[in-house]
Amino acid sequence: MGNSMRNYDPAPDLLQDRVIMVTGAGDGIGRAVARSFAAHGATIVLLGKSVKKLESLYDEIEAAGHPTPGIYPMNLLGANLEDYLELAQRLEENYGRLDGLLHNAGILGPRSPIGQYDEEEWQKVMHVNLTSQFVMTKACLPLLLKSDDASLVFTSSGVGRKGRAYWGAYAVSKFATEGLMQVLADETENQGNLRVNSINPGATRTKMRAAAYPGEDASKLPTPEDIVGTYLFLFGPESRGITGKAYDAQ
Ligand code: NDP
Image (tube, rainbow, N blue to C red; front, top):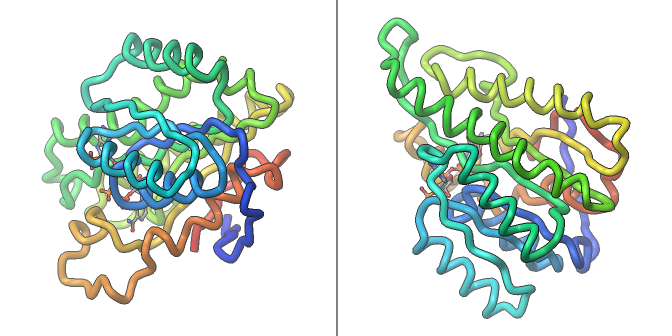
């Protein structure tokens, strides 16, 4: 833990010819990371809930002259294995492989003590933040293993490494995400080309952060654009061989 590549200085063509899928690409950190990946030469599959947000990012990437991205609208809350297998099939048809998958989409859920935590909300948070990532990974694993140099990254949180009062299912889902990352890293360690790591973005100026800390002066926080360095490092060739590690983006 405690690794950060915030000041990473990537080559302009770092991600040339890589196909990378980013979940929750329409807003916040996912949007900034997807844009930066495209600017460094990657073909990005933009997956998210709001089609409008994905389309506006698609237009931005096209207008900037970066590789044409793909759009895949999907609500992780309702999706099941069949939906993920269809996604994997589409990726296979279009690209033949996957060089990277960033599990970034997430929801905060209620901020409430465990004694009062609503069970349905608990299930929703665990589903979006953890179970959907397991099933998507399961469906996409064969495509990742087809790549010569693939990177799988899960998104954690400070409360996924040390529990804190009132963070409920969000904190628990992030701890479990670290567990899933470690299990997968161990399982794939000798399979050659796939590395599996996690990133804790740290306090970042997004809608989720504003919802968690309504009274905070957001102008003092780093923007999503400020923290892309660690993401670029983990999806580029220089992180080859690094697996099972928990990173901090700040
Ligand atoms: P935002 O709320 O700004 O963005 C979350 C993204 O996830 C949105 O694009 C949203 O899509 C997508 N998403 C949410 N629910 C679903 C769903 N059911 N199906 C598909 N997509 C969904 O959050 P951040 O950018 O702040 O957070 C990104 C990641 O970083 C999260 O995993 C979060 O837990 C983590 N994180 C953030 C920190 C911060 O300070 N910002 C600190 C620590 C961790 P749409 O907009 O279409 O709803």
